[in-house]
Image (cartoon, rainbow, N blue to C red):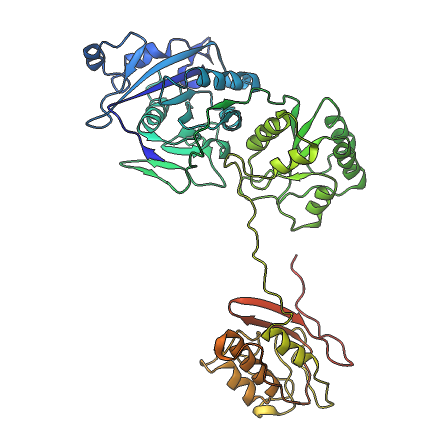
Length: 512
C-alpha cells in the first residue's frame, strides 16, 4: 500500500443503482437516475470553480482539495438499466468487472456504487473475477438515499472517493461507516443502522476519523506486473444450503441434484451437522458424482474445524472445509474455481482449500516437535521406564499429575506429592510455585532420586552436559505410574507410564 502521488488522481465511479440514488414513488423506493447531476449540486462532491478553470467537460466532477497539492477528479458512469441490488447476479457483476477492464488504463482507481443488500456478494465475486489487480476498487452505497436530510450516503461515497483517490490499495474493498474492509471478508449485519457491515474474521484495512489509519500489514501486496485478467467464465450452477435441526435427507437430496455443480453448506458451530446415516449418504453420493460441497459455519465469527465428531463425519462424507470464509466469499470462490478450465476435481478442491484473494485465514501449521528417540530426554525417560516396582511404592492421588513418593520420604505422608513437583516437571532446573525452590531439590527432599537424576540429565540436554552422555539413574526401588508431563527447552511432552504389574491411575476426564 502506498500514498498515491501526482497532482491529479482520476477515478471512475460506476453507478449500478441501490438506495443511495433512490427516489420515493408511490410510497416505495425505486432506483433514481442522474446521480451525477445530484452530486454536481453538492459542494462537497464538486468544485465548480476549479472545474471551469481547468476546462473539464460536463461529465467530469472534481472534489475540493484533498491535500494542498492533489485533486481527485472523477466521472460517474451510470448503468443501463439501474438495479435494485436484490436483482443483481453473477452476470451483472462480471459486467462491472468488464467495465473496469475496459477503462483500466484511463483511471487510477474505481468506485462501484451498489445497493447494500447484495453488496457483500458483489465484493466477493469481484475479488475473484479481477485477477492481478494493481489499482484500488471500492464498493460503497447507503442505507438512506442521498437526497434525504439525514443520510449516510454522502459520507460513504465521499470516503470511498477520497480513499480510492489518495491511496493505492490493490484489492477489492468495501467502504461503509468510516471503515474500509476487504471486500471478500464482509457480510451485511443490519438492515437499518448506518453500520450495516462487519468483517467478522479480519480487522478493517483502514479507519477514517480525524485521521486516516491504514492497517498496512493487512493490505495485500501487488505480486508481479501481470496484466489485469477478468475471469468471465464463472460457474452459475452453484447454491447455498443452510442446515437446520431436523432437516430431512430428502430435502438435501433434492437440492444436490443436477444441474447443481457446487454447494456452500452452512453448518452449525465449528462446522458440525446432523450425523443421521441417510443424510450423510446423500452428501456422500453427491460428492462421489463430482458435486463440490464447501462446509461453512453459519456463525458470524470462527472457523470450521475438526474438533467434533459431527464435523468429522461431514468431512468423511466428502465436504471441503471453508475455514473462516463468509458464505458470500465461499459462494464466489466456488463459482470461480468451478469456472476455471482444465482442472481435475482434486485440483479444484485443492484450490478451494488455499487462500487465493485474502478471503480466508488458513489454519496454522503446527511445527513438528523433536523426537524423543535418541535424545537426552528420551534416554532419561527410557531409564525411568526400566526401573522395577518395589513393594513399598505408593501412588499419588488418582488422577493427579504428580510423581510417586516412597512411604514417609522427606517427612511427607504416604502417597503425598511435594509442592512444585505435582503438576509435572517444568523443565531443566525448573522452579516450582511453592517458594521458588528448584524442582530437583524438592524431588531430592522427597527421596525421588531418579527424578533428581532425570532433571540433571535434562539440564545436560539444555547444554550443561556433553552430547551423547547420560549419567546413570540410581537403582532406587520405586516406580512411575502416573501421567508424567515433561518440558524441555520450551517443548512439552506428555507420557502415560504404567507401573510394573499394576494399572494406570485414572487421569482427568476428557473435555466435552
